[in-house]
Amino acid sequence: MNTRIQALVSQIYPPEEAVDCTRLLDTLLIRMAPRLQGPESPHPAGRLPLDESDSIVITYGDQFSGAEGVPLEYLLRFLSEELEGHATGVHILPFSPFSSDDGFSVIDYRAINPALGAWSHVRAVSARFRLMADLVLNHCSSRSEWFAAFLRDEEPFRRYFITVEPGTDTSSVVRPRALPLLTPFETPSGEKRVWTTFSADQVDLNFAEPEVLVEMLDVLLSYVEQGAHMIRLDAIAYLWKEPGTSCLHHPNTHRVVQLFRAVLEEVAPWVILITETNVPHEENVSYYGDGSNEAHLVYNFPLPPLTLDAVIREDTGHLQRWAASLPQPAGTTGFLNFLASHDGIGLLPTHGILSDEERDALIQTVRDRGGRISFKSSSAGDIPYEMNVNYLSAVADPNLPDAQRARIFLVSQSIMLCLAGVPGIYVHSLLGSTNWPDGVEQTGMNRTINRQKLEYDSVVAELAQPGSLRHLVFEGFKRMLRARASDPAFDPGAAQRVIPSERELFVVVRHNGETGSKVLCLQNLSSRAVETTILPEVVSGADERSFVDLISGDRFYPYWTADGKVEIGLDPYEVMWLKVQ
Image (cartoon, rainbow, N blue to C red; front, top):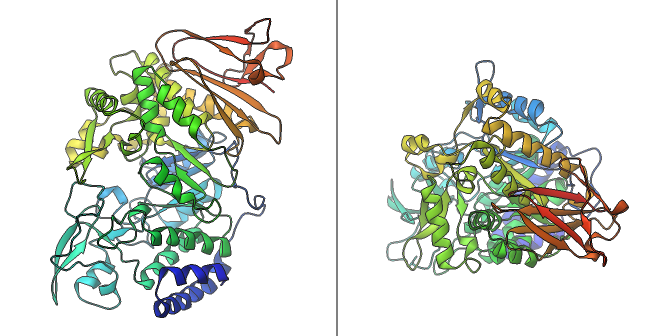
């Protein structure tokens, strides 16, 4: 065990507990290190092991079903037959047995939900695609054996969970849900008030107990052993509890992330660590640490609501200013850029960017298009937390023709694909799905609106049907993914420059200094044709005063002014990725 790991343990725990934790960790690493096998050709040290060809599909393990195999077999079939050469990775949302929250209330971390398949099916996926696995570490299920042992007052499990004495002031604790923070449970020694940040079925784990931390590191490394190349730390911001504080982004939470990173660098340096923190932007990027000691990737949470706002209002002003404020890519860390996921579209990241009136208008449009709104508790009462809606349904008026809806949707997705970072593409976005209100009625959960499970043969037939909404979206997505993978200007570490432009447009230049490759990406997010002028320094080096559009493959001959400027017109909702060098 290296000194960095030992130092972090000593920062997290008092001396006596630190000694116990170090001993347990040492035993774990000696046991697990020989069992972890990395890639034969590791990426250069100090660089993200990702490039322009990489994109991650986000999906549930049982997204597809059929009569000829288990769901994980159908998922691999979809990835292999429909997306080979277009996506390199897959985030399979929690695949363990669970009791609620579509997998995020884990009963047994070391088992596969038998309804999905077996560990062999997970390994088969990871053999062909970079696998991201969830480590649901803030809480586990109230129906887990760990919690059952707690309810029996058994050691060590009576210390695995957090209990709060009556009268304890928890008023400053930040809540992600409009639900009680504490849930009473009966035990042989009397009623215990147990900390439940997310729901009564999701009991928070006590990381102040070293055995819990080592237990979860054991789970993490077991996922790596089964083929996980990326580990997503779910709801990590709430991890460390200390009454009298907000319990959000606690210093020890950051130290735990640093410890996980240090352990991975010791025994599995090829693994990428991702933090999931749906909070304002500055708080979110704090999980990079110093750029080398915490997360490799963080979710780009402002991107979904700001892109949605820009398309709905046909005004990219906020999106332009926010994107221009992002730091230049470092090549060692990056964003997981996404627009949709199994969760809703977060509203907290818009604070300080959208006005209250703009946020209210966005919420109303989502409601008008069939979406739901979820709330969280705050000192000011319950406030809107996220918009639960399918992204296609939210961004494109459902009353429009399918071809127009697909065009509007794809221009929004092109922003995610051209920005610096790694795209995380929710499977329902790829498939051109829309709202599923029947699911909300069935489960009583707003988030179910974007979690419909599909019969494999039926959806593949729809994807192949020319003119269908699914076909238009899926084929358009694949064209953009091929274009992105074709040029090193889209490497996550390549430079990014947002070009101030007309309010209807979003224009960004990606430039790879190592290869000299440069791409000018233009998106018209409005229902009207717009012309823009590109300055000479942006297009310097263009051959034959023309460009190739990487998406269509067509050569484009714009109008050049006498002083070297380029005038480009874009049709409504048109996307052009022009190769400059």
